[in-house]
Amino acid sequence: MLPRAFRGTARLFSTERLAYPFSSKITTPDPPYESPPESLYHGKGLMEHLHKTLPTPEKQELLATLFSHKHPDRIRPGSVLRVKMEHAPTSFAGVLLAVRRRGVDTSFVLRNIVEGTGVEMQFFANSPHLKEIKVIRDHTGKRGGRSVRRAKLYYLRNSPEKMTAFASGVTD
Amino acid sequence: MSVATLTSTEPRKWTPMSMRTGLIARKRGMIALWDDNGVRFPVTVLQLENCQVTANVKSIRRDGSEYHAVQVAASDRPEKTTTAQMLGHFNRAGVPPKRIVREFAVTSDAHIPVGTTLSAIHFVPGQFVDVIANSIGKGFQGVMKRWHFKGLRASHGVSKAHRSAGSTGAHQDPGRVWPGKKMAGRMGNKRITTQNLTVVRIDTQLDLIFVRGHVPGVDDAQVLIKDATKKMLSLGKAAAEKGLIDKVLPKGVTDLPFPAGTADMAMLYPPIIEALSSRTTSPFIPRE
Image 1: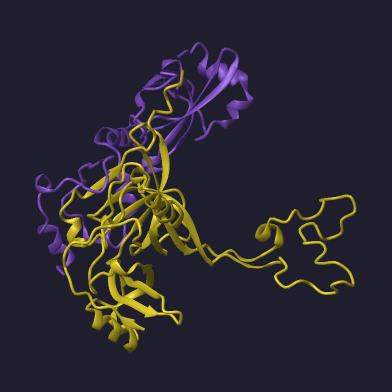
Image 2: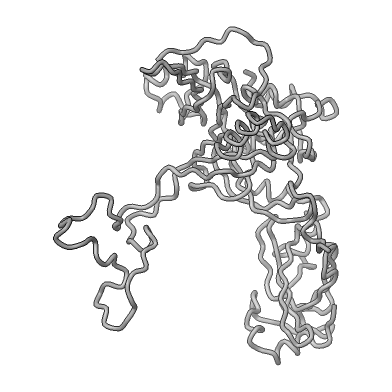
């Protein structure tokens, strides 16, 4: 049996692989790189590697900018966002209440008052249905926004006056 | 107990009456995936750590029936920490010393040459598997957590017995507590089988198997993965006996690597294979 490092170089190139014969309902995405580092075979750093490489390159860029901890363009709670989706409702706008950073499973919650009823929606950043995220009002005092001193703004659920201050006149 | 010897090396074909070997993997963690319809589902990542065949077992029971099994070992360990007896066993098989050695019952046609390295290609995306591992240990637990007892009232006169079991039996008859009475005790760290999990993705480069749903045990625990008894073996046999060829294997799955998916086989096919959704329609489009 060839040692593992040698096995990688002895592989056929991807164009020479045979068609997979055991199932008809499959896809074959490309691997991130030809020969992964040795530590991944022992599981060291495997989950971090998967969180970084499973999203598509566009989604990876989205996660690295809008959902990072330090990027200047990151979305911050208290800002008002509009999200465009493939499925109904095709567009939803609201105050960003929370960002849940979990790598590939990163999600965020928007809240808005729609026809007198409070509505919250949780969007997963890596979902193929998520088309676009746009910032309508900033989290700071500029552009008609408000600044906050919390990471999670769940107190807005019990405070219609503050909700109005954040998101008055914001419609899908 | 005698070891079966393999004579021929011609390619063997899977039949609905065959039982293949299983694999030993490590549970690495959980992550989320999105299918082609855009539905998010949780998956557990299982990684093979140099899973190799160490023996083929064949024994005859007293009534003349045969028991066949494939012994598989995984997770290399240093020679220094391996006993001399086990070192001899691994030397005979021609494999490095391993941490875990387990046996999987198979049919007589599913034996594998000793020393073969098994790969994630053994399982087909879209098939069902049973995953067996030791559950997370919970320590000494009371009856409410261990057996889902209701406990007693929080107030209205109950004295210091809110989470207790209450009565443990009848009166003079039988005048004792039945053996097996559910009581407080050590909970968890027992062998648990989670059945009928779908294999959604395999990565032969890193030897990863992504199964949909939860798997018992902590991260990095050793787990056994085998073809599902209920949704693969039983249904397949019943459908084959009735002649329903389409229902022998799950939707989309056309064949299974037999007798096993080896590391050599993994080099022939694409490194990452992901199953498409088994749904026919998208759940995001409302039905008429």
